[in-house]
Image (cartoon, rainbow, N blue to C red; front, top):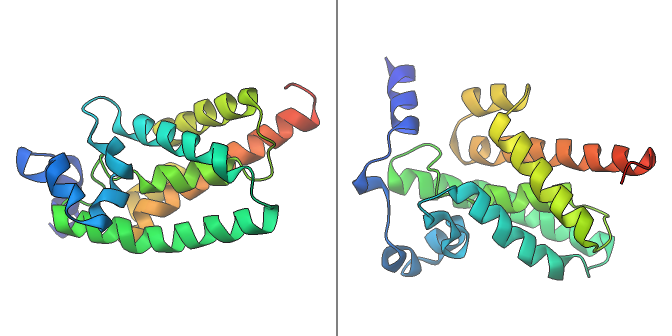
Length: 175
């Protein structure tokens, strides 16, 4: 019964679960969890969050590799708390509007890539593919790991899959 209720909560989004821009601005934690408001998009909030993350990556790409890795690590650790707390406040396990996990997932995908537009477009498209289609093990993680860690880790794995795919495309000179 508990398992069924958990899935019901995960999949049910009612007006009570959808915060307004005014309500998320009042709470910095919700504002970050909702990707500076991008997660409030009525159309494809995960994609909108990824696009905002891509804009931020333009600045992050200037960091040294060590600084970039530290930033992503801290963002991921903070994201476990942030996403878990936002989900608890909304009463929904992985509300579509919580997009901090998309931010971190894309930033992982873009590790060690130079700032070039074709890499950015490829990273966004491949990351959205892995995040939406959820091939194994991403689908298993999404269904079986709960809390803030569960919200974050499927996107972390999608980011790793994207990053590995891009690196393979580079090695075989397909991009």
